Image (cartoon, rainbow, N blue to C red; front, top):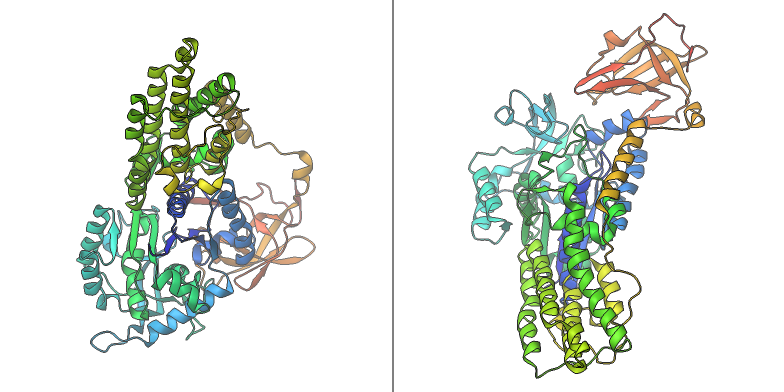
Length: 638
C-alpha cells in the first residue's frame, strides 16, 4: 500500500492578479493529484496565497487600501481562477489566517530553542547592513547585482541597516548537502540538484529571520517589535495547512507518515532547497521527500511581460478553448520541467489537431456507426480475430506507462501515451474500414472493430481524466460509463465494456475552432481594451480636486511612503502616498497636485489616508499630475 501523498504548489504572491504562470503550476499539480487518486492513492493537494511583506503593503498603499482589504480583494481572483480551471485542491492556505500565524509562532519558538551541533544558538540577534530587493522580497549581495541592479527586477536595491534576528544557516549546509547527494532529500530534475549543490559551495551567509522596519507580516513570537521575514512566514504554510500546531493526527498522516512533494518554478530554488530544509532540521521536523522545480517559459519566443503585452490571462484561455482545452494546451506545449516556449498563437491549431481531429473525431465516428448500424447498442467483441489482438497489444502497456511518467513528473509524456494510442486507433479504424464491412454484410466483424475502438476510447478516458476531467466524463457518458470504473485498475482491463450497453451522442465533444473567427475576435478585444471605454456616468462618480501639500514626512519603516497634510479648499486632509522615491518631503511640500477626493478612507501602516494622488508612470520614472496654471486648492478637475 503506497504512502499517502501530500503535494503542494508554491503559495502565490498576492501583489498582482494571477497569470498563466500560476495556472501552469496549479494544473500540473492537479493532474498529478488526480492521477494518483485514480490509481487508488490517498492524496492531499495544497495551494494558496502569500499575503505579507513590503511589496504587498506598497501595492495596497498605491491602491488607497489597507493591506488586509487589498489581500481580501485580490485573493478572490486567485480562487476564481482555480475554480475556472477546475483545480481540485483539498485546502487553500492564506498566510494572513490566524491558524497560519500560530503555526509560524510554533516553528519560530522551536528554531529559537534549537542549538547547532557545536552548541551555538540557531537564532541569534545582530545588526544587518546591506542590500534588500523589495521585488524579490530578499536580501541581496553586491556580487548578485548586474550593473548595480537586481538581475530579476532591474532596479537598484535598498540599502538597509537594522537590528535583525538571524538564522545560522551555515551550520546546516553540510548536512543538507549530504541529504541531497544521497537523495534522502530528492531535488528534481537533476540539473536543479546540481544547481543547489553548486550554491552550497558558494559560502552562503546566514539569513535574516526577521525585519525591523517592515510592519505588514507575522510579529515574532518572542519580539513583537519585529515581523518574521516573509520567506520564513511563507515556507511555513506547508506545515500550517495540515495541522502543525493544532492537529497532530492530520499532521502525522500527511507529513510524518506520508510522501511530501513540493512543486514550484525554479526561481525560488534557494529558499525551498536550502532555507526550508534548514528551518525544519532546526525545528526537529521531518524533511520533504521530493522537490520538483520546473523551468521558465517564454510566450511566442519572448519573455512574458505586461510591457510587451504578451501576458496570457488564464480566464481568456478558458473562454476560448474551454476549461479542459485550456488545461490540455498549457501542459502540452513542451516537456514538463524544462524551459520552453508557450506558442499561444498556435493554441487553436494544436486544439484542432489533437482534440478535435484525433480524439473527438474518433469518438464521433465510433458512436455514430453504432447508432446507425447497431440500434445504439454496443456490439460484441470479436475475441478470436487477429484484428483484436493487434489493438490489444498496442493498448495494454499504455495505462501503466502513463502512470510511471506521472510518478517521475513527465506529465507531457503521460499525455502523449494516450494521444499516440488514439492516433494508432484512428489508423486502425481506417485500415479496418468498418463501413465497408457493413456494406459487405460482415456485420459481426464490423461490430468487433467498433467494440475494440470503443474500448480504447474508454481506457484513454481514464488516462486523460486527470488533465481533462469534464471532457472525459462527457466521453464516458457516450458509452454509458459512470465514475465507478474511473480507476487505473479498470484501464488495465480490456473487454470491460458491456456488449449491448447504450451508446448515444448528441454534441461533438471537441468542436473545431474557427481560427480566422478566433483571430478576429481577439483583435476586436484588443481594440476594445485599447480604447478602454467607460460610460460617462462611471467617470462622473470620481471627484478630482486641486490639493496643495502643506506638510510632508516619511512613514517610518516604509521607504516609498509619505504622510502628507493637504489643503483641498474647505479642509485639510491627511493622505498617505507611495511617492517618496521620486518626491522627497522637501520637494513635494508646497506643490499643487490632483487628488481623488471621494475615495473611501483607508488605514495604511496605522495611518488614516483620505484620498489618493494621481500620477503618470513610465518605466522607473513617476510624475505627479499638477495643474499647469496657479489654481486655488479645492478647484474641481473635470
